[in-house]
Every structure is written in C-alpha cells, then in structure tokens.
Image (cartoon, rainbow, N blue to C red; front, side, top):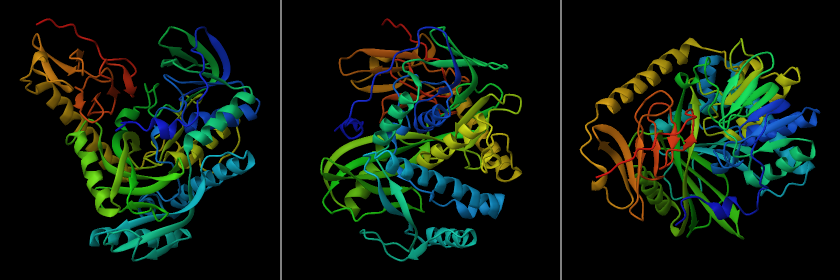
Length: 503
C-alpha cells in the first residue's frame, strides 16, 4: 500500500525547473511553491512585475500537494466563534474573503478551460452527539446573523446515527495540482521564473531586501513574500510563539458502498471528514481526520487504524489504496496571518495559518498580497494583518500553547533513554543513547543505521520519532526531519546533525 498517493496526484508531469546558481534580481521574490505562492506569482506577473518563485524542493509537493482539495467557506464550526470574539462585521468579512476565493478559482477554471475535476458540492457539518448538535445549532444561528445561505437536516446518506447537520450549498472541490499546473504555465507565459531545489534560509530586510540561500547565493528584490507554510524569515514576528502545528491523516479507499456526493465533516471529536474524487474512471473516497499536535500523542499508525475502522463501518472497504498525512498551521485566533511580517518591515510579507482550509484561504491570501504590493485597496487587509492581537481569545491561547511548548522542552531534556542503536529492530526508530548523548536512530530495511542529534535546530526542543511517516517531529513548534536529518517542514531551516557511531 503506497504511503503517498503518487498515482493520484501525479497523473501528469510537472516541468522541472533549475536551481538558482547565481545572484539574481527581481521585483518580487516569493518563497514557497504552493497555492499561495503560485497564485500570487501569477497575479503579479500579470501586473507586469518581474517575479521569481523559490522552492526548497519541487513545487507543489508540500501541503498543497497533500490537501483533500475542498473549496469552501464552510470551515467546520467557525462563524459562531468569530462573531463571539470579533463581531459580526469581521465574521462576515471572513466568509466573504473565502467565497470570493471560491469564485476566483471557478472563474479561472472557466476562463482558461482548466481540466481539474472541478465540481459543485454541498459542504455539510454533521453531529452524532448532543454536544455536537448544540454546536451546529449555534453555528446555524451565526449563519442566519451573517446572511449565509444554508439549511439544516436531520439525516445524511451514510450509516451514521446523526443528531443534526448544517448544509452550505454550492461549494466546490477539484484536483489542486491539475489546477495549479495550468497556473504555473500561465505564470511562465507572463514572464515569471521558478527556481526549484533552492532553499531560502534568511533575509536582509532593508529598503531593497535580499534573500540568502543555503548555497550562498542571493536574490535582490523590492518585496519578499514568505508563502512557505511557516515563515522561514521569522526573526521579529515571533510567529513560532503565535501559532501551533497539527497533523492529520488521510485514507484513499475504494468502498463497497457508492459515495453519495457532498463534502462532510464532523462537529464532534475526533474529526471525521468524507468526500470522493474521480480516479481512473472510478471513485476514490477520501476519509481524513485524527488531528493532533505534531510530535505529540499516540503512535501515529494508530490514527490510520482508527480511520480505517470508521471507513469500514460507514462505507465498507473494498480496496485500501493509499494513506498519507498533512501538516497545517493554526493561528491563535484561527484567522490566517497575511501581510507585512512586522510594522517596520513593510517589504517582507507573509501568508500562513490556513488551519486546514488552504484552498480558499491561500487564494484569498494571494489576492491580498498582490494588492498590497501594487498598492491597491483590499477590503480584507485589516482582517488578516499579522499585527493584530485580540485579548480574547489570544492571551489564553498564547499562554496555553507556550506552556505546552515549555513542558515538552523540559520533558525532552530529562527523558530517560534506555536503548542503544544496536538494540533496534529492522524498520524501527527510537531515541537512543550514544556516548551519553541523546540521539535518534532508525534502522532501515537493509539494517543500516541512520543516527542523528535529536536537538531541533529551530529552538532546541528534542524531536520525537514518528512511526507512521518515519520522520523525526518536533513537539514544540512542528518542525519535521527525514531519517537523514533533512528539513521536511519548518520553522527549522537547518538539518539535524548526523552522528557517527561505532559499537
């Protein structure tokens, strides 16, 4: 069983782009080749600006390449909370921004005749408990206050005993890489440039900012856009303390019962999300959920087991085709950060914190970033500004998130490690002791040991073994590393140190 759905996502070949090997100058340099980076680049290139997109690996292989591709303004239970904390005006603005993004995607598909499996679908939140029903009733009331088209029902077409469900009609879904493959072509045709395998590690933020790459080369520009999931240039914004990271798990299945249509997500915990997508003339049913903080919680394989049981109970599993996981950034108030990284750095812009809803939030972010750079008014600038801070709920969440970080930092330093590398079985990873030092070791299928210093290169927490993905994950701020120490997800930008060991 593949652990990443290559045949689903890679039905076409993306072009290969060169590595940046000499200093370059552009009007705008965008770090991150996902939906935000590519859409922003396309919009700015259309404005006649010289734009470069820089990606540490290959474009479209990060969070965008792992998404379940819902295009909707229904972001689970959110509008009741937004009204409570920010008022009806800003709650409505959040809905409008995401609806505008949905309409932008639809218009792009129509205008450029993009074959990306786009189709209209209703988005449905369902509850199976009285507590979940209470959440849905409050959310429905919020929809009424905000004038959001909706309906409530007391059944959905699954073998699930539900108490109620909330429907937001005429939302959408698509194959994101097919869509973005076309945007990449349009970006290149408009004069844009893409550099792959070019890792940005720092910036010099002056009147004419520079991006420094790991290979020692520089990009000079008027504006820098950090659209790399976590801001790689977070020196003064302290976003590592203002966000937290969660992983979620996805199964791609052929089911015994046909999928009835629609996009479903549970109001109860643990989250369960269901939708289907076409694959080779058949339906691939996507079941996702089991979110938890990166580097924390139970053995990650158990999350797949839990989803498998749910899927078999509800639809019956005929063939278990794929499994994979995704990582998402959460801001303290659940609204993305989009705009200048600090008040004193107006030429360094960020976009992050999409909270699993990157297709619409990422598109809304791209449109805002374009307007900020070309000096055009945008109605959502203040809603998304990274400089906002609301006493409630952010203070409580800030204390909670950072207390959790401190706990895991201390636990990692004091943890007793009984194992040594030679005690590992084939395909086992674990913290180990090497010459009195806490390290991490993985023994691969050939019996070769991969040993690393487990101290995260971001802020020094101790990383933990992720059995499901065979990675080393930081429980403090969500950085992830391969078995050879290479950075898979930030905020870390430097790899883990490799350790030599002799018996």
